[in-house]
Image (cartoon, rainbow, N blue to C red):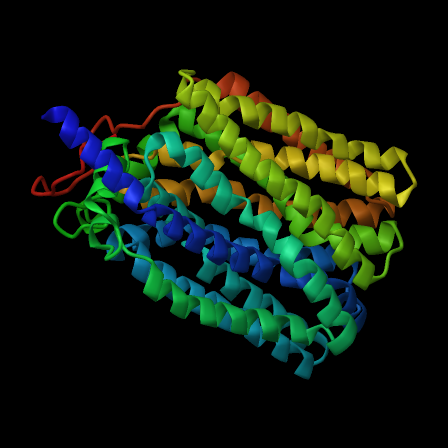
Length: 461
């Protein structure tokens, strides 16, 4: 009898694959997310000339997004836990898309007013995007069993590369044909449409009209936190001691190593999102149209690496290797490959530069498993807050990377030192995972963070 029930459950699980529809939506939204971040880098050469900005000044403009993005991470995580993933994320998509669209209006102003408006709108885009990746992690935790979570996280995380593959050529063509303002108008409008699609697609597992009982049982038994957004069982942040949570999370050696490692890995991301097209135009003397198409090639490699890294990690886990080894191995080998970008300083042929950068970003993709680690380690009571803290560390690199590179380029007249700086961060990420993180496992608070005991917490790990 039990065998029949098990067989029926398996059959029902196979009857629907609703979790992959959810993942496809996360991938789409994250693609738009990263494309909107990258609009400034594609428009940058024209904006730089129009406004007469120095490399250092351009570095501060690039970093504006990350200042507010970082500062809004913990509030964004709190909002996710308080109001749920669906509503919070919808507002996030709508607002960042609106502010992206409005950046096109900067062209109607001149001088200091134009710079001030551009910086202000980039700050608003950053604040609006803050709940996005903690939301991705939270939704993935709710919809995917542990053995599929690495692949799921790798897929939505690889959207950062797919965004460049899909939109960098388009945005380069828009700037070349219609002017830099058109990039913001087109991408902002696309995001507003995506926000509407989100409301028709995303549900909590127990609320989704298309999920079968078998699939729900399958993901629940595999470790998915299916009650995460359920009003009857989810812990509400107003009942959580937020500062106690943050204090305990930061005091944990495993999590601190993951946080520092993510800062280093995200340094590579922000080089690609901000200075890479400028590097191709200024250092390699390409046109902006050519740079837009060339930038897509390393992005293709990063996308493939991202999918492969998650797949390999989950395969190792299914073959009986520990969670720690399964997550750490791709990260370490990926960062070793990323360090290869330093060799671009010693070659002159464009095809070699593109090849080396493609290898570096393939490695970055393979090693970008931080969000899978967050889904594996976040406490059940405060998943949004934990993801927000992780993203705060990681995206601090969005502040430091553009500014440091700006000073290096202005001080040396070259990107050589900048590539060494990026490679060194990859090396530090390796050291974090090898020497600091230790065993990867779900974090449990030493003291209950709940201010009220009358809260039911999901019990599946």
